[in-house]
Length: 94
Image (cartoon, rainbow, N blue to C red; front, top):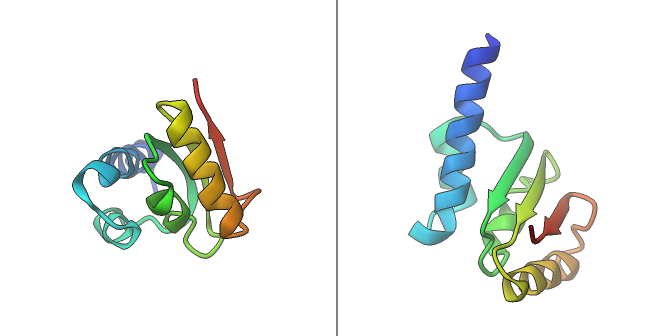
């Protein structure tokens, strides 16, 4: 697959993940729309962390979260810990 195509598909994936929380999208709908089920996802604005943890896709996706505020940071970290997914997800607030 050409690098330009991979970049384009990855960009679409990131955009869908970014908008997913706002529009009630599920991880499955993002995977279906992009065809991407493994790799690295940067998730901007994780909300309650549920979409974030769903994006892990059975350990095939590493997810890096940029939380928009401290509440989102703490809520997402709590969701990750409850589901035992530390190491597959990192959460930071810029």
